Length: 189
Image (tube, rainbow, N blue to C red; front, side, top):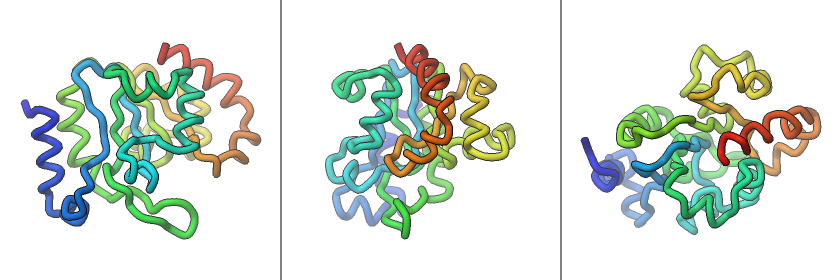
């Protein structure tokens, strides 16, 4: 069994991450033996990479609101692990950020999760996390997967991304904040 520091070192010396390591950018994730919940999102944004603090933006503010936890609790507790689909900012695309690199989560998530035996639920934020973890068991699209979130409990809790870019989705799907968010808060607290 590897320690989290050993896994981090392996990630940093992996040739696929060489450009980040050369620029002194460490992989951005948080893992703890005490973690009972893991949050799997897309990849760190530019602000998160610069501050070395995951979910350090408006998306993070909304996610913490949905979870019913303070910013302080979100960052200080060892009960919540953070495992993005890629631990590095992938760069900008025409609309939003580029997707996480293929194969990254497949390579590193199993090693980290093996060291977190108390994980009860993995919160899957967005299509990339849901595709990787739910595979063919997910619904025909993200909206339907999130709408049928109870089907995946207690192992997984699929969510839409809390990005301000998704405000239209939230308005078109009021059931999310009426039904899903209260159940997420209950799970967390």
